[in-house]
Length: 250
Image 1 (cartoon, rainbow, N blue to C red):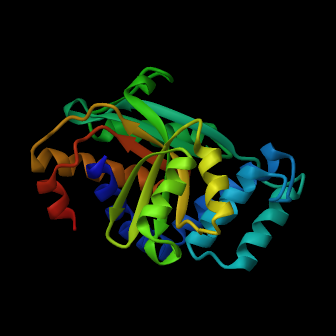
Image 2 (image 1 turned 90 degrees about the vertical axis):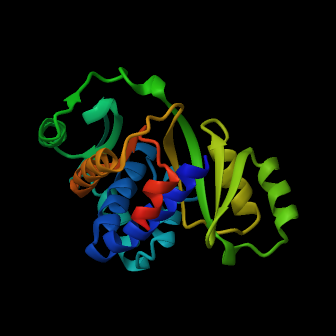
């Protein structure tokens, strides 16, 4: 998954820019809202999904006051109600896309997503049509400065927590788990008092397609268009992130 971890590092840099625009905060506020409503509690101790959302807010340097306001607003019965939705389809050159979004207006969201597929001569498919092409994995990004024990001991603890793969990329350690072990790893890191920069479930392509640089950049422009939509949380695709392409994106 080394190509994926390098791509994650590039997305972190982009995320820092998004955070300045408030895009990351908007996504986190939605996640807090969904966590409170679906978890039935505004207490993170009894609501694991909310606890995770708060942890991600902290990793994104979201002010504590913003987090508390978001929880309070989500607890209001008359507050906005967001739904989690997914979309699947093909972009140009046969590249598969899996889109995750949270929205208070499904008609708006599906219209926007379809418009982007159409703009790039792609096609929006039916739900479930491409899910088999992606493995759902837990992905934990941990700043090296947050790790107090030596590398070998820490890796043993991670394996005990369900780690399938551990990669160091720059100033972070990226840990992959199975979907089923996501909660186990979350608890393990809490026990070790290790704060993550982010922790989420991602869809990792089980096969990738290599394109030339021009074609690849077209796909990444399409990814950016999806990312710019306020309703879209995550964009996954099976474009092969070659070393040549990654070097041009650094």
